[in-house]
Image (cartoon, rainbow, N blue to C red):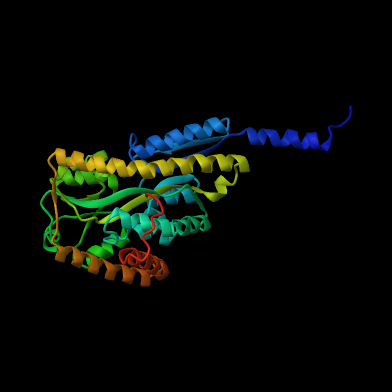
Amino acid sequence: MKSLPLTLLLLSLWLPIQSEAVTFKIASIAPDGTSWMKQMRKGAKEVKQRTNGRVKFRFYPGGIMGNDKSVLRKIRIGQLHGGALTGGGLSDIYPDSQIYSLPFVFRNLQEVDYVRGKMESQLIKGIDQSGFVSFGISGGGFAYMMSKEPVHSINDLLKSKVWMPEGDNVNRAAFSSFNITPISLPLPDVLTGLQTGLIDTVAASTVGAIALQWHSRVKYLNNTPLLYLYGTMVVKKSKFKKLSVSDQAIVREVMNNVFAKLNTQNRKDNLAAMEALKNQGIEIIDSPTETINRWRTGSAQAMDKLSQEGVFSPAILTTLRKHLSTYRNGKDVAQSGTH
């Protein structure tokens, strides 16, 4: 019996390996049923179909795998392969990725759109160079202070029990600049904290407040944008590289489209959620201009200190401020798309 030609022998060895499906285990703090999870599941279904089952995604929503830091630890030991992470959560991968979510940086969404158009590619590149593949950044809208009692001023905040996410050193520094000591809790414990009175003031997007049921425990929303929320799904590059080049291209195409759609949909959802909060009796309040300016000045000084300490680079902070200054001075008002 003649031996098989070498090419056929190699092909017989190669085919079984390629037929095995690669499953990405992805965690998210986004509750199941939200637009984030619906769109990511829809994208996963399309990827599975277009790769004939060679690439699959298994999602763990609602924070069941812990907060962003816990998810990253599980990625490092191989228990997970990726996560839908917030800007702050991404900082453990690439510190400069948190630059959009610094407190009191943006005044409106037009500024966000302009800055993102200038800086997005730099952030995606930084994530890639840190060993992760990103599928585009999706904006989650502004977080606003929501409280049981009206918060107009710094003095009001000093009397409040303010929640802060675990490990959020950026906002801790901002609060500290006003001698405010926030109460750190994991996301799943916030609703209980509001119910028991452990905390009485939170920060969330309008959509997030409704999805997490926090809106049922607050009465006021301060209309000053606190910080910009955003996120992306990342997967470990070493795992992603196990896919064939053609399957990598399919995953990138599908998931990039998912996050582009989310980027647009989230803005619409937040506008609708703001109206829903008003209709449910949440009172929208404003702070005096003097107070807002104090918040911005104090936060800017705290961010300067953090950049000097290496929490993020001085260069990225300078770049952000340069673009904001350019936009505000009207030197370049060309929009790069809606984010």
